[in-house]
Image (tube, rainbow, N blue to C red):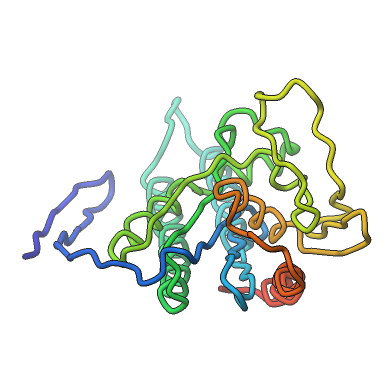
Length: 263
């Protein structure tokens, strides 16, 4: 049974089609995937499933949409007179921006869910920083870009799409996951809950690249994604063998694919 809802907006109407769909059950609850959300790489997807190659989804198209919107909106704002705050052109520009962003997030979430179903993965862990919208300190331009990307909206899309196919979603606090060395199994403390300064056996040497104390290189977003999984489910990687190390290092090939653009 389907229902149609008509929602009036400032300069348009939105038609929503609401329908009921039964939920299914995932076939393998032991296989877990993890997502690290970011900017240039909107998503870094990893898993504890043997043979799973990390996936990076390009976030630059969203940055371009926001940059164009901010520039054009500023131009239109400067043309307003008489203390006006908005106009039909600004409202139309804002609506188009929201539609483009929603479309990109919808395609991204669909790609992720389809991959999880194909791999028969039963649980998805999503890293979320409670300070995304309040206390980030990444520089003025990066702050503006980060806040403009609706990561929470992407999480919402993933939650309802995974529910329909029987995949469980767990949102995980992600402090220190980008600094900890996954290959060295560094401890991952929770921000504000330790009296000592955390010490890690690796570091990010440049944008997108993490180097361990043993000289191993791994994509920094892939490293963070693995750590988010490990923080949520400590025993997810019961044996850190050669194959596991190859999964992590496979993020290098995923990085090159991401930089060619698209999802």
